[in-house]
Structure formats: structure tokens, C-alpha cells
Amino acid sequence: MIASIPRALALVLADRRAAFAAALLALILFGLYATVLPASMTGGAVGLVSLRYLTWGEAALAAIMAVLLALTVMLGLYGLRHGAGLRPAGSLIGALLATVPSLLCCSPLLPLAIAMIAGIAPAAARFGLPLQGFIATHEGALYAVAIALMVWGLAANARRALYCRCRAPDRAVS
Amino acid sequence: MRHVPSLIRRLLVALLLPPATIAAAQCLPPTGKTLARLPAGLTFMQAGKPVAVKTYDGRKLMIWQVATWCSSCAAGLRILARHRAEIDAADARVLILRAYKNGGYPGIGIKAFARKAAPALLRDPHFIFGDDTKPLFVRTNPLHEVDFYQLVAANGRVVATDSAPSASWSTIAAFLK
Picture 1 (cartoon, rainbow over the protein chains, first blue to last red):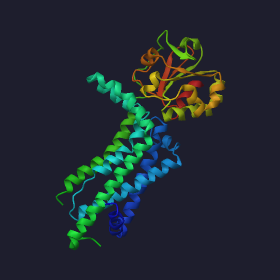
Picture 2: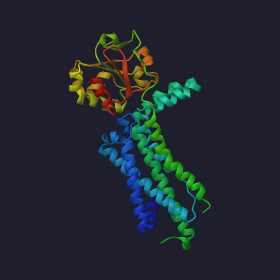
Picture 3: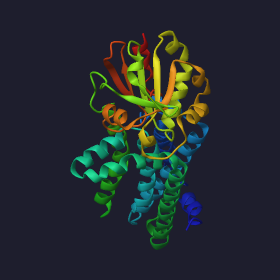
């Protein structure tokens, strides 16, 4: 499944406009992740304030995630133009999971949500803080799962792109 | 092209959900209910003994509840260490308390946490390290947040509450002036 990625990318990015769009999208996504990932240091505050805390490790993570998502989108669009369906679940879950440690670990978001839920179901109140602690102490694992999901989404889209090319060569774009 | 409506729907979700989550996080009030004054009779634990919060009456006081697993708390401690001279000059006291039950998740003690993040503060008498008691945590921190602080003026009024000194040093700096 993973082996299909380079072949599909070579096919899709052969078009110069597609390559440019992928680079631009990757750049935008990098900016987004580079400001969101260090938010675990700012209690969930995102923007220039979080960018000050960006480490080399987080910058590398942001670059990996941005490239994976940008390529997934390009392969997805290619597949769609050639009649293949789209299943973005893996990439979407991965993209959202990647923002969880930064936005939820030490911010008031989770305590506030739990307080609101606890108004309806008081038993829920006791799960709020342990969840934050778990997220904070398993940050690395959560990022690894997020990246794995993104790779899975990319591989699925690559397979679909190649499949539709085999099935309908007359409709494939050079 | 029969997939287009479904694609548009999914793309909209993919594109709008992360910014919406971020926007929601930014728009949150910094605290729960703001207290005009600290409730009377509150204590915290230091070296296994209860210490009354009113010990610091008459001085500017920052009460900061942290969890030792919280990365923004460590970043906040480093920010306080960087601005230590301003805190010392204002003769303020910074009460740094390990939140009750460490915010619900196990972790190292408060002194070990300080030694790791900003050891110089352990030798500064303006910084007091201790452990939250349940009444202090419950009565002053209604949402049970970690990395939550209150700024108490010399007259005993709570003038500001916020979270994450790493992102809100300007609030603390204004309080110290």
C-alpha cells in the first residue's frame, strides 16, 4: 500500500500547476501547524505568542504534517477528477488529532467543556483533569498516531489515484 | 461529478473545523467566576504543615496553581524566572502551588518541578512553593483549571485572574507596577 505513494505522486505532481498548488498548500499548512503545536506552552493561546515557543522538533513535526496533508489533498483531488470517490477520514482524524495536545493539554477549553457537560451529567466532571494530564504526558504518542493516520490517508488516496488511472486511462490527465 | 456535493461538504469540515476549534479556544473567558476577595481561612501546605494565605496580607500576591505534568506551567515558571528582578523590586510574593491532586494526574512534587524548570527561584524568598489544599483549590478555582493564577492587591482584592503566565506576562507586569 505504501509502495503506491511514490508512483501516484510522480503521476500527479508531473503537472506543474499541481506541484505548485501542493507546495503552496504545504506552506500554508506549515504556518498553521507551526503556530498551533507550541500552544501547549501557552495554555492554548495560538498566534505570535505561541510561535515564540516553537522548537526545532515542533518545526520538523509541523513540516511533516503539512507535507503529508498537502500531498493527500492533491492526490484526493486528482482521484476525484478521474471519478474515484474520496475517503478523507484517516487524514482528517490525523489532522485534528495533531492539534489535540496543543489545544487541550493545559488550556481552559477542556475544563470548561467538562463543566458544561457536568451540568447535565455530574459523573462526567471527574474525567476532565485526568484527561488533560494524560494528553500532556502522551504528547509524543499522540503525534505519532496522528502522523500514522495521515500516512494511511495518503496511501489510500495514492491507491485510488492509481486505480482510477488503470481503469480509465483515456480520462487520465497527463 | 456525483461526488462533488459530498466532497465540498467534507472539504468544508476539514478546512473549517481546526480554525473553529482554535477560535473557540481563543474566545474562552480566561477564568471561571472572578472573586472580589479571597475567601477567609484558606491554607496551603508547605513542608507538610498548613500555612495561612493571609500570612501575605498587605503585599501584592500572585497565587498560581500548577500541575507538574503541565508544559505551559514549566514555561510559565521560566518566564517568572526571567522577570524575577521585576517581581523582587515590587516586593510581591508569588505563591506557586501544586494543584490539588496535581490536577487529577500523577506527577513529580512541586520542588522537583521547580528544580527542573527554574531552580534559581527556590532560593528567592519572594517565591513560595507549596501544595494546594482541597478548599483552596475548589473555592478559588471553580473550573479546576491547571496553570491558573489570581493577582491579589495589597488591600486583599483580587484584581485579575488569568491562565498561563507564559502567554500573559503583560497582565502580571501591569499588576506589579
